[in-house]
Image (tube, rainbow, N blue to C red; front, side, top):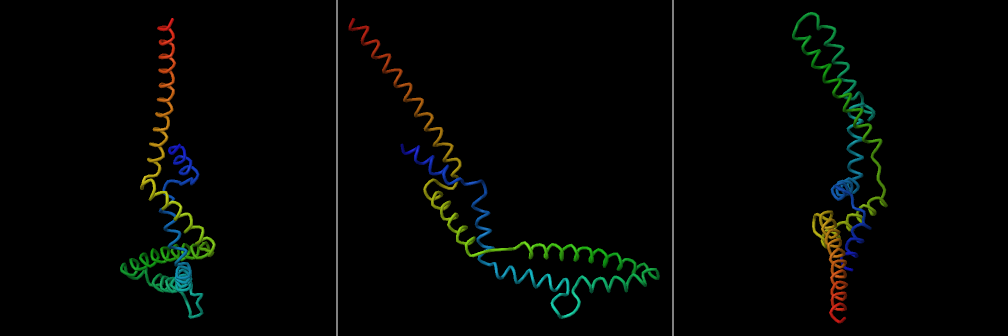
Amino acid sequence: DLLNYQIHEIEAAGIKEGEKALLKTRRDQLIAGEKITRALCQCSQALNGDDGEGLGSVSLLSVALKAITSVAPYDDRYEEMRKQLQEAAYTVEDISREISSLYEDFYFTPDELTETENRLEEIEKLTRKYGDDIESYLENARQELDRLADSEAYVKKLQERISSAYEDLKA
């Protein structure tokens, strides 16, 4: 009965591989949600210049690239600088798009934090009971239950054979 209870308890929790680590990461993000949102917003504003203080890094790199491009034919060093600025401009544009996407996609609610913490507590409770490798414990419990079921059937067969032999002896 104990094995059945343990197996049911673990299966009912429905823990997925790597879930605990993902939940911890998400919990940390939710706790720092305002800080993350503010940082992503500041990055986006600095890169794109939509902070009301002038041009952003993307625009300033574009200005520098146009300037160096106009003199690149006159010296190989200027051409090398143009190439480097072009590469930097592509990189900064990619980063800008990624940060804007992260900013737009980042969301959180107080309810999500509560749900995440509750789920982590459920997993922690099972970890305290069954150890760090709950999946292995579950597999071992299933095997033990199967072994016990097989042994019960074997004992029953032996009892039947003993009864049959006893009846033969009585006769």
